[in-house]
Length: 215
Image: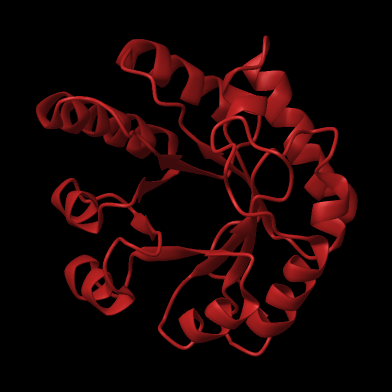
């Protein structure tokens, strides 16, 4: 059965204003095997954020790397990104699909709620994300998901063809990701353990290797 989102490391950008630093880090993570990237910025002037996203979009096209925009499907459509990731307060899947088109990727946060995932899977999403699996420095107050939530999400996704992916997020590192992948996660979404690592390429490669081991 085909899958609607690439299996492997799903990098999420840190909230860096330094665009040159971000572009260099993304190149290194891609060299380590990163399969897709989500641009996630919460702070900054709209004009500066858009300029950074456009630069990242150009790089993603050069690398052949999927680029997903966090929260803002309007901005994703504006820069012709590969898709958008929606949280509970980011509008409806139908709105995003209408704006982005049928060929773009839409993913959504399902937190610790398989029931929410079941509903979203009927709304033409390409992946459902559960987390935080582990304590998260980026979102210390995030609800906690479990490996059972990953297993149930995987079971729910398997009823659809092509199959939406199951993404795990929150405090994931190369050292603790293996049980999450074994539970059924198609992708691990990682910020700090890759982009704050002393060697970004090596950290990405260690994450990527976990999927090769489980193939």
